[in-house]
Image (tube, rainbow, N blue to C red; front, side, top):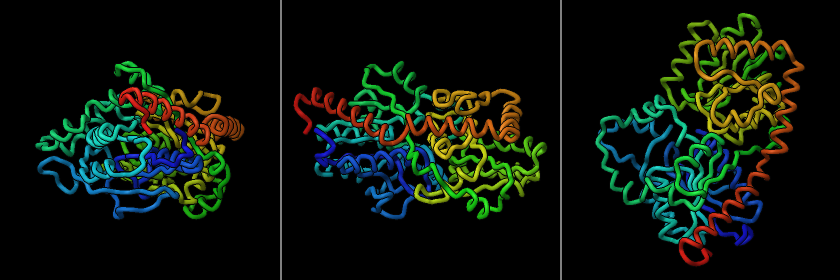
Length: 428
């Protein structure tokens, strides 16, 4: 069976909206585009979380959305909004029926676990179709403090949805998957240690390197009041404790004392409003309002996304944990120097001193450590160019989406072979 047969590849993420974009959405959209170019018919089935339209096309890929709920008693509107933003274990019976009824399906590709992943598992088994699961992070590598924060909206709330988790086999998703895909090398290690089968593969995220290669950084600077000669530091990720923008802000406060003509730009949707409020409070407390821009998240198709990378002098990703770090690839494709925390998938992505710089993970003095690296790059344009050029070569040669899509197709073929063995017949 080949992609040219135009059978449906059904991608199932927890949510998928242009206004609340993140790395997972980028991966699904770009892979779907590559599959379209290869002659397949990918589509995205997801919940109505954070969305207002049942159907639309995003980047040329059809998206179907279904009503959903969180099966807990006593949830406030604020609780539901928090779970929509991040980590909510939703239930959508109408989406399950959609999975059962979509015609001409080749393969189901789940991008979520819990009840929704269980719905994909059960639909695939009932239809005797292969299903794969991508772990986009947050399964084996979430710090306990962050896990507790994600579960806070449902703390002490009676749950009436456990029966559906049992019915859909939510705890058996990874055991039953025909292929488990890890985007991070660290998560791959942990998955191999905990799962009892060998249907586990590492597939890195990718980048449209040509798209990010050129952009009007000067226009972005003018639009947001950044001077031509400012040293601009950029972070582009959701505003969330995981992404650790407070650490970057503290380091920037140190940097600006030595380099007054510096600016910090933080771009991303606010998945944790309390955390965003702490950032704004620190900006006011340190008198940094004139030097810090806190901007909303950008749609994937917004020209400002590319312009932002070209407007900066250095891109910083100080995450507490990070399964991969797709924004690093985007910054590299724009030829920008990158500073990243030495955690998760970033450890395998960045080589300190070659294509980027590391900051030490955790512990006292990390903000000073980051400030020193920012100062080093501010003082050495040659080093910035060297790191940026090395990063651009890395992104182009190893991580272009066209290469990633070829590898994914091989994993699909492996999943189909396993499913054929499971069901004792060809899966066509």
